[in-house]
Length: 259
Image 1 (spheres, rainbow, N blue to C red):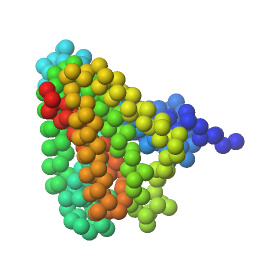
Image 2: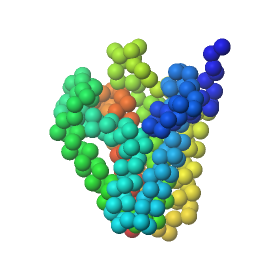
Image 3: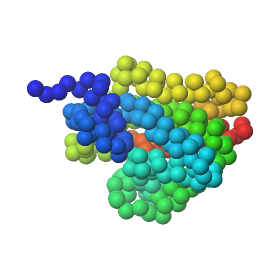
Image 4: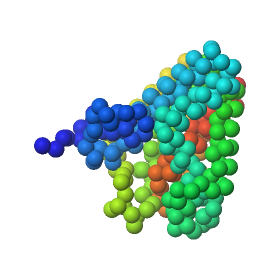
């Protein structure tokens, strides 16, 4: 009898899909569960943020703080297999080198080679991430990572509702096309992302401007959505990864503007 794609299987599939931890050795959910992994993306963020924040906080007590920041960034890349960074590089290559030609953008993003735009984009992103976390100090950076990672993933997950999948001619061949969320899934997604940022804003409101913390990432998401709509009329997996990292980075920038 085929195993039912219940909520446990869908959550487990999300942890398998978005991390390189061997969850698949413990349990392998049905293949159809992978169409809903984006619905539990912020929940995976609770794990990736927790490990990244823990590395930064503990590392800052054992090593110079700049080294602890680099180790924290590297830890998350290892944890996710640099999945999002790979998408960011492809996004910069495609949108940087493809001009306004939709098919050329898609072809460049599909190419496994990284180009000049991709290299420069990722280097600039990592530099900005490093210096924003460095500017916060260990304690504030730790709490900010825990809150912002799931929040940014929640915002980025809206892409599957706002845009169609861009590679329409390959839909039948694609390994994983995210399904559109129903009301229940949307509520669960919101809880996963809003709960950490809500707790963070409540306890740290004297140090941060929570309106800016919400507004700047939302503005970044909207700008990227408009860019993807105007150039691609849709999204790809690379677009989702790029949006997450850039939305997350904008939230870190919002925090350091206040401090």
